[in-house]
Image (cartoon, rainbow, N blue to C red; front, side, top):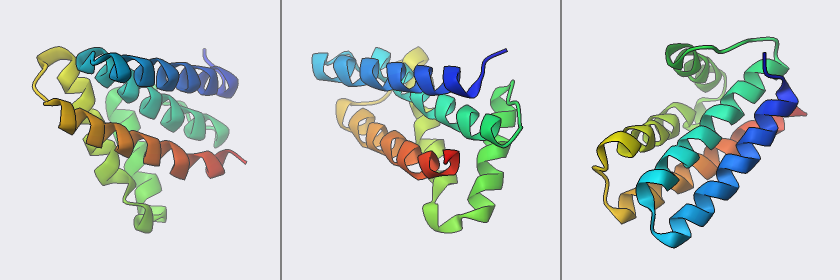
Length: 118
């Protein structure tokens, strides 16, 4: 079972990998890494609060719970954008600009959730 430390390590790795892949123009691979970075941060916050998220559905439900506590963050909408990156990995259906916009949403998700780890 992964720990908070593991989730944070993976978040950092995936975010770094995503940026490198984006710079190379590999948008499908970058999409999956950005998605991974977002989900690992959600799992880290959940773990910090004693919650284990083992399924995609459980992660979405957790994001909805956090969004209800902090509606001003718009977390649910940004997580939905990040989710389209996961789909893009399989379908390659997003143009470059859309991937870049959603990548910025992932960075905002991470920035909003990080303070919950303190």
